Length: 397
Image 1: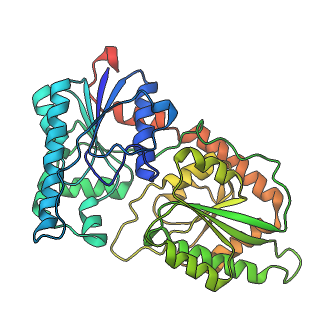
Image 2: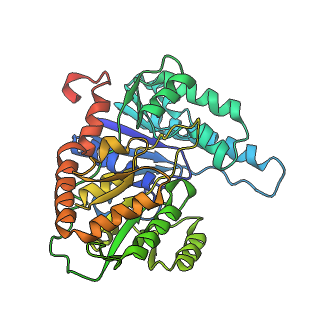
Image 3: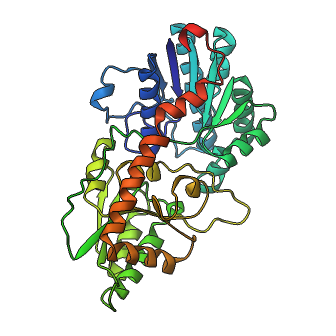
């Protein structure tokens, strides 16, 4: 079975360090484990190609350059992305395939174009409500084009796989009649093995965070919680050990976070962006992992399916997370991690103090977290949910 995987988003390098890049690679691996021959059609290949994907066929067609200093450059850039997506669709049609699988990108209707001409099964993967996300955090110039492209692609697909219930609802609102299904993210438990159980006992413990340093990940709240937890350390029996922070990732908020850590007196290591294969080792050097998502904004759904949380589980880390969005369905409070209310730094600090005071609790939560990742959250399972909705021929299903 020949699968054409399309990613027209120039902000998602196929071989990169972002969570979106990891997602692309893992779905490709799942297709290959299922016996498919995969060709990736993209606008940005990236430079961090893992060894096991060294033989992956790539067709890279970047958007034409746009002078961002010229008036109207925003509209021109969006149209350039659409033109690149059209070129990717032509390449898919030229090469032929048995299945088209596209990661939803603004301004790309490559799936619709390709399946109209090839008449093959297709799936559109939707990871976020990109139209609103672009309007809220960046700039979206041609809203009507973005809306039309989404409708065309979603209605052409045999399955629209959304990572969360809010994303399912968003697609159904934007493209009534689309054949949606829920397909939360997963984790590669071979790439991310369990944390060694011989961690040395130290007077300072480390809590890890993995992700891009942007406001919606709540890292400032983590730093505040660590400062509060440490302020109570030594205040009495069972107060626990002091915590440091390891922040794995990079982004526009890094400088502000470095200043915040210094101001709070929190010892914080910023690793910067690292290849996906480096993440397990960095996690294994820590004692817990955090997903400190903030209080939801009224009227906005928490639409994410957090890759970091699945990776924490796979690494056998005791997880401290805020109970927002999909997280309570992934982390079982008191069994695979500790859940706290969003926006409550004191509660987060109390959870850290509890872990710091109880090595046996850290060990038990980590062991059960790893078991949950292995038993429930494989990428093969994610892909199986999607392919089950496709009209594949029996001999290639």
